Amino acid sequence: MKLTILGSSSAAPTLTRHHTSQYLEIANKTFLVDCGEAAQIQLRKYRCKISKISRIFISHLHGDHYFGLIGLISSMHLYNNIEELHIHGPAGLDEIIRLQLKYSQSFLKFKLFFHATNPDQHDILYEDDNIVVSSFPLLHRVPCTGFLFKEKPKYRRLIKDKIPDDITLEQIATLKKGGDIIVDGNVKYSNIDYTRDAPKSHSYAYCSDTIFRPEISEYFKGVELLYHEATFDNEFANRAAKTFHSTAAQAAKIATLANAENLIIGHFSARYKELDTLLVESKQEFERVMLAEEGKTYLFQD
Image (cartoon, rainbow, N blue to C red; front, top):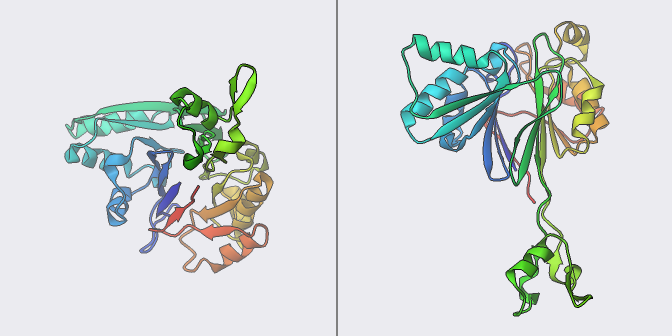
């Protein structure tokens, strides 16, 4: 699993921090999570392959999370190297994009599909043989959803130099799925003798703009990597609540409640030139925390 941070600022971008967008590679799929202004420039700057993006997930309709979408879609048309694109986002997003295309007299060479998210419930948004992508409700000033990307359990690894010559492909498949080979009521090939543990199944939870809401942790218990917005430090806790945002310490509390393995905090207010205070305050609650750093790729291996 690889996560590249494209933008880490909140409502107002700065000269060094851009609006929220993330490039996620997981289970042989590539997703874009939110698409703030300048997302396509950041994608090119950090050499993220735009043509690999199959689905875009938009958390809510505040501009710093989707104003880069029409530009990216237009460039995808010019590149002429994709066949279809799926966008998951709030109701109304499809109308916004189609109006922009209509009044600019633009058309697309690829098929564009919209899938409306429900901000009030947990839903399965996408599923294939390797991964499930689901949404869960956040609480912000406009309807907002978080996303969980979770790999399905993987097959066990064969110990190739121990595999007998007479074993069939069907029997190999049984071993990889954790079963034993039974012949005439007896175990002929025991799974434990011919396989190793399966590679780790990765998971990533994305919590964009939200007021501190402890109950959301139930949706991603034990997640490998959690991203949670941390717009303010403790000094501005009242402002965070008033604007339906979170502090760095509150983001860390969510990580603790979820028993997350790792935490990335982002969506930093433009008031912060340096982010040391946010990191320190979050580490007081949860040790394994990192700042969202634009251009950095966070790699999680099997």
